[in-house]
Amino acid sequence: MNATIRQYFAGRKVAIATMHGKDAIIGPILKNEIGVEIVVPANFDTDKYGTFSGEIERIVDPVEAGRIKCIAACELTGCDVAIASEGSFGPHPTMFFASADEEILVLLDLKNNIEIKTRLISTDTNFAGDTFTDWHDAKKFAATVQFPSHALIIRRSKSSNDDIIKGISSWEMLQEKFELFFSKYGAVFIETDMRAMNNPSRQKIIQEATHKLVQTIYNGCPNCMLPGFDVKVVRAGLPCKICGSPTKSTYSYVYECQRCEHRVERKYPAGRAYEDPMYCDYCNP
Image 1 (cartoon, rainbow, N blue to C red):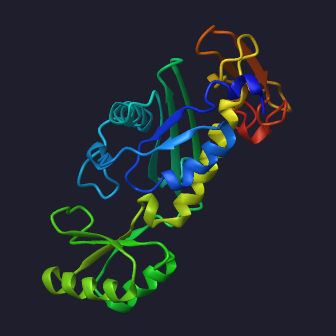
Image 2: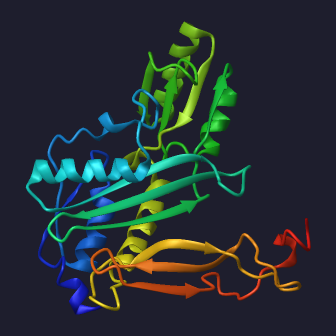
């Protein structure tokens, strides 16, 4: 660990912008790795910025949502450092038939005017949902998505938010609510509860993302040693192994300091100097 980097945060209070238990995941890592004291805002309603179940739509992108939460957490606690986590769920950006959990963590240091963020995409998620008219089929689905260790949500239909029950974590409750909703609507939509405190799979991904964020924090600017020396520009153009033509694959990352604007280009981030011809528009049009 770099002592110069650590001194930026050691002993300071960091607010974790959460109402879903993320402090239990993120807090111990930050406390151990950068020596901070963890503060959780009391009665902080993060749902007002958007809910996974759709009652409240997130109207900004995840990074901006993280910033907004960090600022609000600082205002509530008096801290000048805060961290927020934003999760998004859906098809994987390249493996289209697989579900993915994208976690973005934003750390905002108002004192030093630093924003450090990280992004992690994982297919290790139970994200799923479907409509059922038969209890046995619903029970099979629940087992597939790791219920009851991972909680479920029941609602009238996929697109309806007027009747919804979250945090279902026992077979008895699931069957009771299934029968209730089926009797009322003739069908039941069941989905995974992706809130952090109810989803151990997501907790692991947030944990991984936090460790990745710490690595970024300790990546100091070579010129002024400000924490968070991170990628500013991604340059495509990795040459084809056969013809040498530039491909769409990444050739280099350009890192830039947030304070002194010192830049460093690091070539071949994937560990190879050439791309497979199958990704070349000339060799494989």
